[in-house]
Length: 103
Image 1 (cartoon, rainbow, N blue to C red):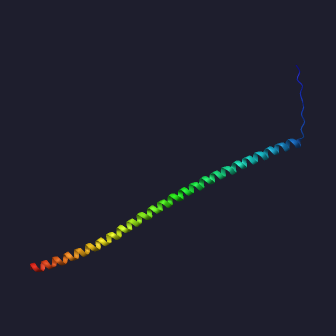
Image 2 (tube, one colour; image 1 turned 180 degrees about the horizontal axis):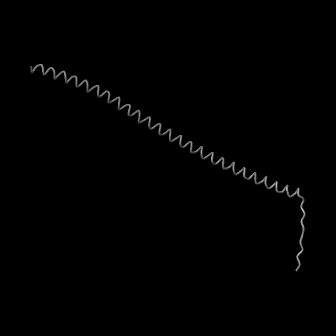
């Protein structure tokens, strides 16, 4: 059994052209994958930003409601303190009147 060797001859230009074509194809594939990845990352960041914005808005709304409620409570307390001062003044006057009668 004898083996014969075959010689295949390609021009350097055709080999380089094929290599260049494969490199171009790989570059396109890599660029497409990077573009796709960038779109995915951007979408995730946008979604995350919307979620954070919504949570901040909800927190702000809750804080505003609590502050308004606290402000109302403080105002009500001021009114009650004023009423108590008036009641104390009235009692003080009645006490003075009673004290004068006892003298």
